[in-house]
Amino acid sequence: MNKDIKRILWVTALYSFAGGLFYNFIELWLLGNSFSTSEVSFIYSIGALVTAIGIMVFSYVIKQKNIQNFALGLLIIKAIIFYLMYQINGMGFKSIISILFIIDFVIDTEIYILLYPMISSIKKDDKLYATRGLTYEAFYYIAFFISGMLIGKKLLTYKFTYNTYAIIGTFILLIAVVILLDVDLDKYIKKSKKTINNSTSSLIKALKDIKKDKVSILYLLFVFFANISRFCILAFTMIIFTKYLNFESGFASNLRLVFNIASVLLASIALRKLTFKNNYINIFIKYGIRVILYLVALLYFNNTTLLIAIAYTLISISSYTHTIDAPYINRYEKDEQIAFLNLKEVINYASRAIGYLVCGLCIAVSLKMNLLVSLIFSLISITFACTASYYINKK
Image 1 (cartoon, one colour):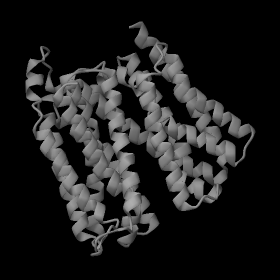
Image 2: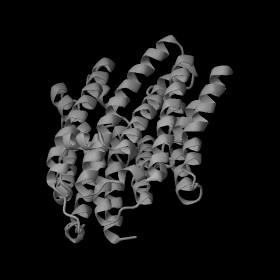
Image 3: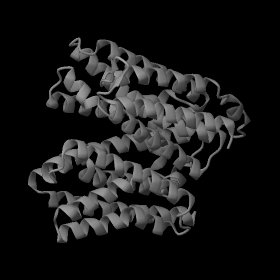
Image 4: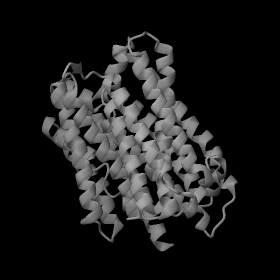
């Protein structure tokens, strides 16, 4: 593998690890800083809304030629935010904490968006697209495990608290900055024979162009409905585990972590050994089996069938992105790819917000309603996924 791609993957790993350490307990950290549960929910909602707006703003200013500098700048700002949150912990500055949290929410998403365009500047490859995602998720879950294992423990006289992970994350992010500084992305961009008008990175321009692109429209519709289906089941996993399945909170957290790790392992197997040339089979394994399990859980509703349905949804999250998602991302070059990824993330956050809302409304009625709605949206998303796959193969 190219050494600069390896460096970018190391940046991905470190940035993910730093976030996983602090975010594992971010809700409890906020509660410890005098936030109520409703206030935590509110700033999460505002964070998602501002993120969608931020993505649109970034799409105007980030081009392929300045992508590395932007990524460096955002990593540095993120490190500063972690350090400031560490310093003001327990001081009662709720307004400042809220602002820092929302800014970090936006920055974190944009850094993730920029990682693959940096890799694709060097080499475009469906497996590399999936590798970027798997690297992020693997180190995120490793951080979950380590932070959970160390919390409350002592190293000599120092006790690990929620706030400890903010300062550790700061130093890890700075290491990521140093590694990214060692990447010479300019030499790959200059070698590109195709010059691209900078205006193509505009999100508005991308929207206008996509109106003429049946394949991209079908893919984005698939993303929209698949996300609603997923979050209708998973938005409040811990509430379902503790309130409805009567698991202890510690056991529920560990169980979710096990499913997340299994997701990464299954995705790795799918990437290396279990990818079918017929993409409809890949789509069926990831989404079709979910539909079957949702239907079984509806017909034979009990704790076991519900848990199996949730478990498979969690385990299958990371699988087959190299065949189901990457081909649509890699249809675009350079600046157009950044614009398309930004557009995809706007849709991700819009559908996620709807999924959270639908999940809450359904739980208030019955968990069967969650399964039914997720099943319906899954069927719709599978229809769009298969249709998009048909047209992209035809092209």
